[in-house]
Image (cartoon, rainbow, N blue to C red):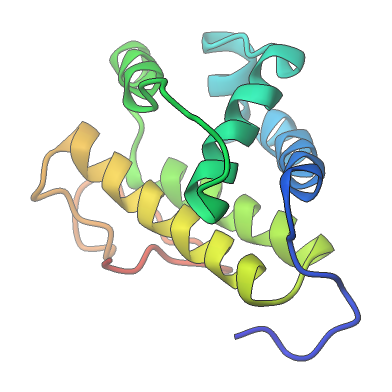
Length: 151
């Protein structure tokens, strides 16, 4: 749980859009996962932000329609250059930092927990159910700030 803060909680779509823009600034410039966004997927944020905001609005508040296949683009990226546990760990690290940098409260905590569950699920779906996130398998690089926990 986050210690008491003067930061607001995530309350709706506008907050999610601001959060996602903050996250993608960090993700695009990150040396480990940035190339997936900028070089492989060539993500256009102005197209991506409304879609991913729908996804998160649905995940947190059930107030948006999201009918896209969230797995398909990740499978395509994974086919181009396999995504390892350290990639997902960095995603979680950046996601948590983006949330904590701007928000505090039950919805912010839920956003972090949902993000972590999604990362673990996506990692296992791409790499097989026996793929490890605990640091004892091939390709895992522990991150000092956050480790992927077993869901």
